Image 1 (cartoon, rainbow, N blue to C red):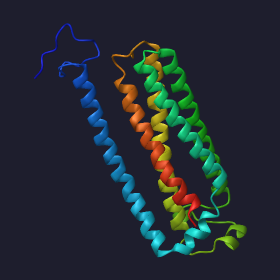
Image 2 (image 1 turned 45 degrees about the vertical axis):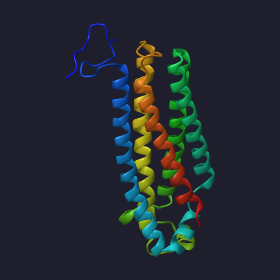
Image 3 (image 1 turned 90 degrees about the vertical axis):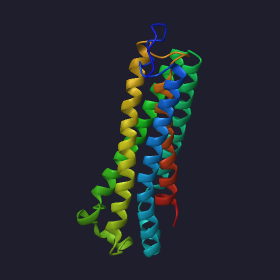
Image 4 (image 1 turned 120 degrees about the vertical axis):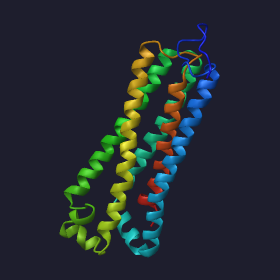
Length: 221
């Protein structure tokens, strides 16, 4: 077990030799977590692929009920937030705390925009009775366009995948608020920005998953 020297920076935990070892360990831990997340979403993508192979005509019909415009806006919003979180990491590396806080605030704002759009998408569909599983109760207008007997299963997959992704966005918002508060207290600088970079890796995964979800659910007919 490594001994913690009194000359070590305060942010270095006692079980690490130095700041570099702590950073590399944290980064490896996050990559292990991200691989687990990819495997988790991989199961959902497999369910999507199998169901799509069984009922290709259903996906053609159901995709027409999803709002491509707002889905596209959300894609741009998330890509923009990935850029600002990368700029936040860069600001921390260059000891620009004001830039770090501004970029975190913009990222939080963009993430909130994504969730607000997603809320209105959900609200509109549920108002039309487009719900998953046994809650499927579409209006006559929707039934005239989408009468497939397995439509409720498609929207079950839709709500499951987008809902879990939305939960990840909420977790990311919480993490960035935490970073913003800590940045205001002077906890980060060019020597120590590990939490900022680790959170940035998480946020890039959230962005990447949506980039796969959007074309699969909204665009492919």
